[in-house]
Every structure is written in C-alpha cells, then in structure tokens.
Image (cartoon, rainbow over all chains, first blue to last red; front, top):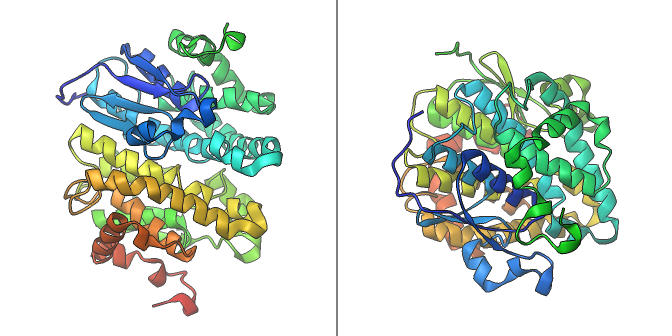
Length: 220
Length: 216
C-alpha cells in the first residue's frame, strides 16, 4: 500500500474510558502500534466535561472522541481510523480488495450510524425514563441486521480472516449491548467474533476496565 | 480489475441517503437502474421479506453492483470512487480526505439517523421538535467546522462526499422547518451545489417515483 507523506506527530486522544467510540480509537492505535497520549473527558462529572467551551473548540459536536494529530484536529472515529491507516505503517485496518473494503465500511456504518448514535449518552438522557427499553430496542434492531450480514462476510473475523475496522467497531458495541442487558447470545456470530477478538492484545490493552480514567470500582 | 456491472439502486425519491447515491452516480457519470421502494405505501415496502434479503437493516438505499449487494451510502460512495473513473469523490490529500469523512459522518452518524423515518415514527407526537432539535444541534457543529474547511465547496475547492451528504441534509432540514439561514456557510454551500447538474438531475422532485403533486 502506498503511504502518503505527512509530518507525523504523537496523537493526543481526548476520550472517556467507557465511550465506545473512544475505545474504537484506542483499539486502532494499539493494532497499529501507535503510541499516544490520553486526555480524559469525563462525560458525567461537572455536568459533562464535553460541554465546556474548551472542549467545544476541539469538537463542536461536543462528543468524544477528538484527536489532535499531525497538526490538525479530527473527530468522528471512523475518519480518524482511516486517516491513521493511510498515514501509518503496521497491519492494514481496511482490506486491499475494494469489495471487502466496502463490506468493512458497510458493517462499520451499521454500528456507527445505525446503532451507536441511537443509544449514546446524549440521546438516552433526552429519552429519559424509558431509556433502557429505547437503547435495547435499537441495539437489538441493529444486531438483528448485523447477524445475517456477518454470517455472509465473516471468516475468523468480521470480514474474512483479517482484523479490520468492522471488528474495531463490533467489540465496543457488544460491550454497550451488555451494559444495556441485551442478550448477545441471540446473535451467535456476533458473540463468537466478540469472544475471539477479546483475546487479542490490542483489544485487551484498550479495554474500558484498565484506562487511566477508569474509576477504581470498575477497574480490573 | 473486477467485472463491473450497471448498478441497481433500491431507494426512495425523498430518502436523503438514496439521494446521496444518485448524486454520486451522476458526478461519476455512472448509468444505473432505479427500483423504487416506497417507505409509506403498504405499511412500508422496506419492511417486506424480499427487501430484507437485500438489506437486513430494512432501510434504503441498497445497491446491487458488481455481483455484490451493498448498503450504507458512504460505503457505496467510496466503493464507486475506488472502482470507477471520473472526478474524485474524496481528495487525494490524506488530511483533506479525513476532513471529508469527518464532515460526512457528522451528517451520516450525527444528524440523519436521529431524524430518519423509523426514529421519528417511534418518537410519535413530538417528532417535529425532536427532528428540529437534532438537525439544529448538528448544524450548530457543522457551521464552525465548515467555516474552517470550506473553500468553494465543503472541503477546499473540489466537490466531495461531504457536499454529497450536505445537500440532502439541508433538504431534510427545510422539510422540518429548520431555519437554515442561521447557518450562513451551510446555506451558501447548499446554494452553490444546487446549481450543479448532478445535484439537480438527482433531486427528489424529478425521480421516477416522485408523486405527481411533488413533481417539478
């Protein structure tokens, strides 16, 4: 793969230990062997540190993650993942084959557009009392689609036998599903892939249970 | 080089995600067939078993292309950019390319999914306020981001996937009576883009499945 020449800096990740979108980036950095600094943004404390004017300057959507890298500021985790794939060495995060690459993006977007935004903190705060049912509904709906799609595309991993952006999106979404008490056992391919991926160092090192800002009572 | 086929787009005239693909095909000069999926009629044709086989998410669009079936419009747009000739839909420069994807995702993950048909049906009586809220919230973020990245178009002076996402989202905003004048950069870009043939030809007002009373 032809790597483009940019002036590379050590990335700074503004994120939250339990944000699934932040976790995607921690996995991607780990898979590529990229060292990075973390600046925690606590989504609950002080009414939510993502809502400060300071953070808004980094990401006007007032969400995590945001990344300072190579002289620019990027938000939207899939944009960041593909940027580091195109500018850093290390294992590919998207396949070389265009059809497989399209499948990786399709599966990633089912999660990143079709599920996660419907159950993120901001939306469930807005839903209020019925938030558990709302989140479960949208996660189940998304997993009901993802399961047959993955049955078609998956080998050892989500698309064939190479780890990709789709796997990076899947594991944090399953973690969210479990937090909302969705029965992931209803989705055997998703469950199998998640279990396989959780054995991999990059997924373990980046896990919410062992980050700098993980609270003591959730630390493993 | 894979075998290329004439794409078949399963979509709806007024679906903003379907419109993104119609724009992309037009920009690349790709001929395609359309199979309309009426989201309202018969309780919603996207909910049939037949359509579910094409897209298990039961949403439009879905595309049959080169022997595979793809859904998720941004995946399709990047696939055709990588396999077809014609003007680039994403810039060559990696940083600009990242900005295009970032802006596209603000729309495709941060705004549109919160105001699509399925969600607003679920919200029920307060759907107008809900949709306006999320579109305004997204546009309040997009406006300063575009102020930084935009030249003639969303990112610099070349049309990209970000522009392809923007115009249909502004159309949705207007349907929900959001005041787009509050966002001068968004408004300016939208007006410029609507003058372009690919955006006009693909407009919801002139598709095969556009109802007569909405046809221009």
